[in-house]
Image 1 (cartoon, helix red, strand yellow):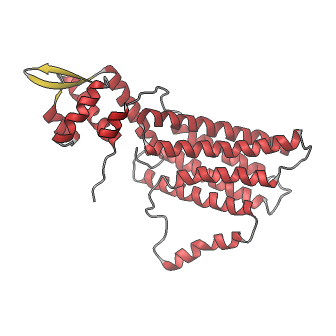
Image 2 (image 1 turned 135 degrees about the vertical axis):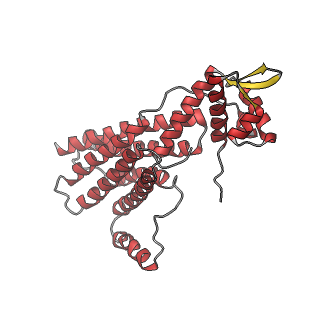
Image 3 (image 1 turned 30 degrees about the vertical axis):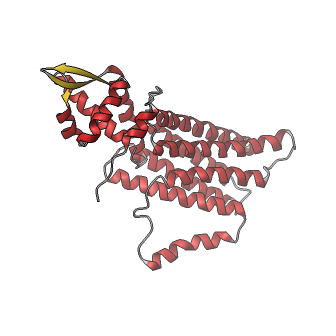
Length: 95
Length: 216
């Protein structure tokens, strides 16, 4: 049986994907996020919209495509998420 | 002197538990994780438990002018601590702790029957001991699976708390010995060991809005 991810884990994965792409180029495409973060197409647009409205992601137009870059608050959130995730792991638990 | 030492150690236990609880609460505020919420409850309960026992000593010393703590207050404090240990232990899903063999299961239940004929403090301590041993085993299993090196510190901390509970239970048989003070020292060492991974937490709060939490 597969292990379901929690909401916060999905958000963490999406931010992680966008951070990795922001370092190299001009953001991650929706297709790339779907593939790398393993989120369904129907779900990802709503999550991305929320993350943009929260200021954790920035939506940019690059080469006539909508792409997503992680913002500075997004980076800070991701760092905090990873720290808390490690902390919970220390107790043998999952965040 | 021993009375004073017990007071100081209970106060330290209260403070350490409170600090860890606050760290876990900050984590809960940042992420909204139910696991962090349970850890928050656990460490606040442990802190309050130590605090109640410490308050009991203070009240008896300064208002009632007695040398020993009221047994009811002692049992209340220990009971609150046990609630904390419960939240730590049962944040884990039950995996491999309970043996499959019917024979070993029956052997494993024996301590409960031995302790149930004694007073309520013994029973509470035995429950705390069992919960802490369970939490420690699950954490060590996680460590051996290679998830986190800091799990060793947490597992050691829970083990020390369990050992402290055992010594405290044993001190009831030898009340004139210094076993109780030793048990508190061991428990404080356990709390400090638990504090090691908690001390890495950031103190900044980042909040997701309610719609976001509901929709995803």
